[in-house]
Length: 566
Image (cartoon, rainbow, N blue to C red; front, side, top):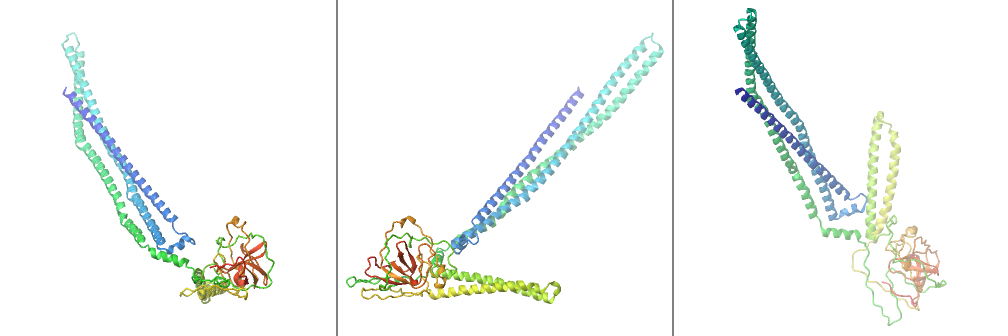
């Protein structure tokens, strides 16, 4: 019974040990899966940071001013420069999020991925050792049980052999030889039992030693290593979590600087400076009109005209008076042309024209400087070739030098042309002084003397506020297309207020103008309003605008349509 109870106790301990190994194996597997899950979490966080940084960079790039666009010109305003600074800071801000993703990948994801592989290998090694030790003790137990059963069997056989010998020895009818044989058989069985006993004793001693070593040395050592492995795993996860926070914290100073930069950019906005920029950008340079004098209608009828109109007496040889409607679409309902305009920017007001010309001259000077730099470089190269013929042929540089010289000459001529126009504009810009009085011209029926207000060499304002070039460049006049097609189809025919004689030929290529030949007589139906254009009619189907400086006007002060334009 003692043997059986010891056997049961041993079996229970072995079973409990196997159960503990199973529990540890499940727990360590869960630990590895936890590390893998945390690694996946960090990886997804890294991907979010990368995508966020990419979207921020795309947003910053989308709203960056395009080259050669209106947005680039807007950078002269402090609010636009502040917005550009904000976009640049936002781009740097996106870079910090890219840095977060990069650090998460290198310091956590890559590290944990390698550690998981090592952890799996270590766990496998520990449990392999545990299973091996368990298998060894189980094999020892089996050997012990086998030797014990053999010893038990041999003892039983020895008892039976001894009983048989005693029976044969007591029987007088049995021969002496049979008794001797039974005695020898009994002795042999006793010897076998004795040997089995010795073997069993040896196996028992060996098993007890191994069992003691198994439960007090091998298994505790394996469990200790598994415990250390688990503690190391938990510590590694804690370090990774700390690194996770430190990665974010490490970029906070730079992120703070980016936000400070945005705040500084916002504080740099100057409303007064921006409004002054608008004034400088759209300042026309026109001189304000003078005062309008009082007209006394108690005396003979007088006519007040605008400062730049032609006021002349009634001329001789009027052409036939037309009577039909005009189908032309006339200023001031003409839409401004969106084209580039003349080369000399004569379609712009004086101040804007001066700025455009100056900018053009600056661009040409930059191009000249580039060409000069290339010429200097080629000249130095030619000198090197002359001194060291083995490096190259000096004559091979001459064609390029000649080409550059021609380019420089062309650019210099171009610069002179624009400088001439700039000098002309600067000479015409008004000097700030008291506003002049607008004079009214008085015309009496008894005295119709023609007066020419301007000559064809001057530039005059076009119906849309632009300027016409002198006679040599008259073909550069731009009168834009008009709108409101249907509004003027039913317009009543304007009355004639005088006649005019063309002093110079004018080719009215644009809609709203009319071409005239030198010396041609036409009807005046609307005098110059101060913009440099006079509205005339040739016949019942043709009427339009001509430059006031191209005609000599004879106004009829008694005409029905005569009126004062301010």
